[in-house]
Image (cartoon, rainbow, N blue to C red; front, side, top):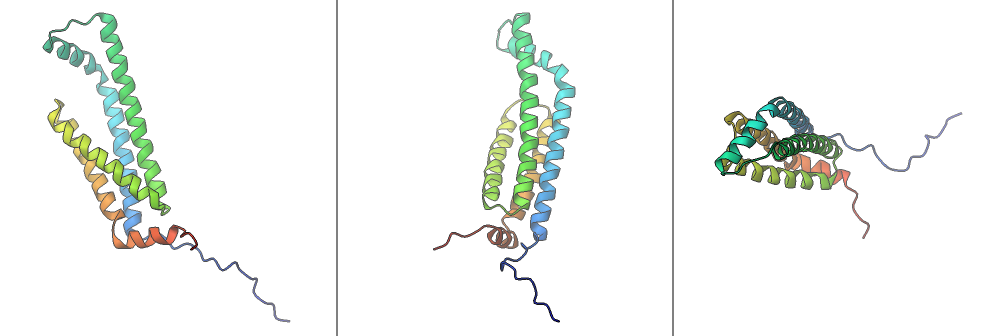
Length: 168
């Protein structure tokens, strides 16, 4: 006796991501790793924050009380931790969403890259250690690579295939 194949719903397995998307996702995870390194370096060098705050106050002819100095240190520490964790989270979120072919994720990643570009450009004008500027530029280059890969034709075709189209 011959059996009929089990009927399917007519849906096919989603296509696998092209190499351009896979490489963009790898770059995004590299960006997360670099952000983690940046967070660790920021925490290790937080000890120099007190002298930097004192020097900035001296340059602007202000005298800080010990309470004000401590509050500025704590604020700086919280800022470093918060920015570092948010940065890592955004890299991982964008890697997962773009790897899944979410159409909105490529746009969000592009906007975040634009914001990072503004941040890198503004850091040129701010006084900071050369190593910090080079590290920021390295993270920016990783983001540029990911964005370029996400907007390639094969990436667009994959994202379009993953995004359901409304019925007309």
